[in-house]
Image 1 (cartoon, rainbow, N blue to C red):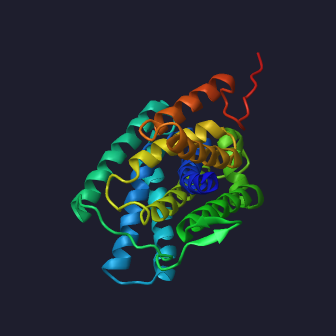
Image 2: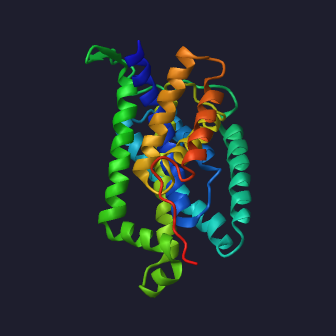
Amino acid sequence: MISELIIGGLASGSLYALIGIAIVLVLQATEVPNFAQGEMAMFATFVAFSLLTTYHLSWWIVLPATLAFAALQGIIVQQVVIRPLLGAPIINAVIATLGLNMALHSVAGMIWGNQTNVFTSPLADWPVFKLLGVNVSADSALTILVSVAMVVLFTLILRHTRAGIALRAASQNQQVAKLMGISVSRSFALAWAMGSMAGVVAGMLVAPVLFLDVNMMGPLLIKGFAGAVLGGLSSLGGVFVGGLLLGVVENLMGAYVSGSFSEALSFLLIIGVLVVAPAGLFGRVKSQKL
């Protein structure tokens, strides 16, 4: 029983981690908390749904096409909405993302309607299998494996590619990065593209578990923020572990403490952790020279 709860929590936590990573990629680069991340993921997931149901394309075509759309979506948002606000108070960009959140929600409702839709998983026909004596669904295993792969991929990009190193340099000091010949705008566009791709992967993984509708990513966005803060905003690995911890704790509390208040209890636990470690469990506190 407890093993199955932990597996279920890891699957849920993997989704929280993907959204948290999407948020942190943008936050580290531009210092903008993207409150439109959930609706951007929802909108791109609906695009995938249309490609699958209206145009009857295979998953092998839909997946790369949706990832490309999500990357383009992130770049457009950064260039059109966020870039003109560089140098302005951060609150301006925060308000812009909140406005974008509402706009995408309304446009998605106009295009696809406000009813719920069935988003079929590519593993829908796969049976439940046993792992070390624990029943594991194919969707849960896929969610965990994909989230791990995304963390590894993004970490490799940031540490071992010219574009990733340029992004890290631009996020640390824009002026020095410009003097080194780095295009800060291009680097920030990369961060938004990567964040948008991580978000839509989470959307396409959660849609078969829940029903696809315009409201599906709202709770996931809050959990993504919470998991990111819990793990620490300074590393993708910390964000990933924070999301997993949140999912497991939420599942265990729901089963053994109270199903009605599992989310509230989980967030109270997060508050308690942050009182002790303000930078999160794996975050680093920036030192300031006086």
